[in-house]
Image (cartoon, rainbow, N blue to C red; front, side):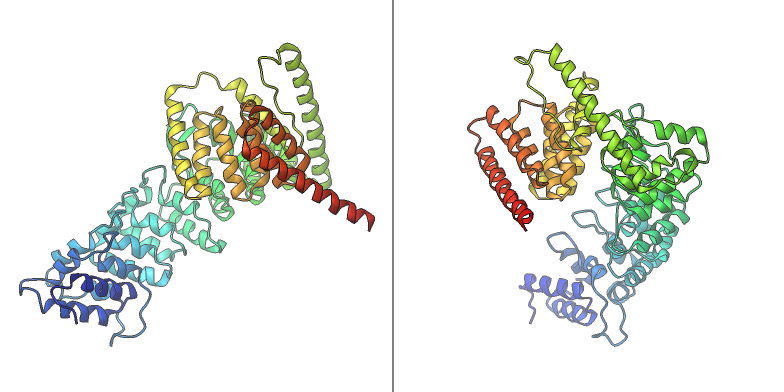
Length: 532
């Protein structure tokens, strides 16, 4: 039995019944505890006082509880039980104070209800709360987000009616930018790639019907095309959310002339993400204006590559095939696209060899470390990009250097928690401020390796090695990336070069031994198959 001295036991029982959505157990626990309290003690006071470690009250937990199908005679949902309980809350003010309480993250009960994994229950609870307290939709969490933001990015797509209800209660929320670059609810929806594509479509469609701005963005440096918050289409591409991209591209007023740092256009980014469906749709829309389309096809990025050259360097046959169609949407076969890719690789390798000869004849090898030579096809683009960075990024401001370091530090924190995608994003942001810092590429290469994106990990490792050829860790990253792709001999070469720079490096010694062992095993396997 609960006693007045056992507050801890009461807290456990109170939160447990709220978390389970059990109105009978909740009411029994509260009434039992009140027997030992002064007569003037109210339920509202108890519920405001007793909260968990996250500062969540019973009504917070009730909003996230599952649907209770037994225990109550009228089968009333627990949130309705709270809101419509005139015995517990004889005056509206006592209930208003409770439902406006925020947890440690600034979440209100409405925000938690909007994120419920059951869309029907989420709608029921959101509607219940808004019918009594519509201004709750204006509240913002510590992230600067409203309940509409959290509904848009809920694990399971909300019902369109839920989006509409939240919008009706607070029309300003649809255009509200959350802090830390999160953006509007449409940005949040585009960044969330759900397993079922139709769920993403329903959410984005509902937001657009509520008046969400398809080109909403905030600049950090407009002249350099550095976004504080990029347009939703770029957020969708970064998340590889093909469904979101396709829906946004249906909007007549969408701006396709978007770029990051004035060089990576929408076409470049779609190629990088290998989003062929959206690439085809984008090209179709661009072809309505031949001049704009031609400009987009010819636009070069920081590595001096236009979209089709970038696609060829990354070996993306489908992207090359679409881009080769050009202004007139000509039909191009896979064989033609493959032949183009092979020709590009030959041309780039020849160009790099010529550049290497020019540099070696004009520069003393005694004072400048020798640059690594591309061995694997997709290292060719990496070398060219690194050389372009070395030649173009000079006199970086102290402000940009510090901004880059701040993002690197955040990336390191995510990396330590094994949050590889979040760390990758931070290192990528750091590069936007200081693209010539080799450590950013080293760290991002490690993230990509952990994400299983091995070819991209190799590209970053090679750029790192080129930017800082006298750094043994760059050799280590390159060796790891090559070995992961099965290039044992090439990996051993990178590890050996690292040991020339740092002879006592234990990691490189172990890695070199692994290269030799795996190389021998591969040779035996290949030889055995040949004998058979």
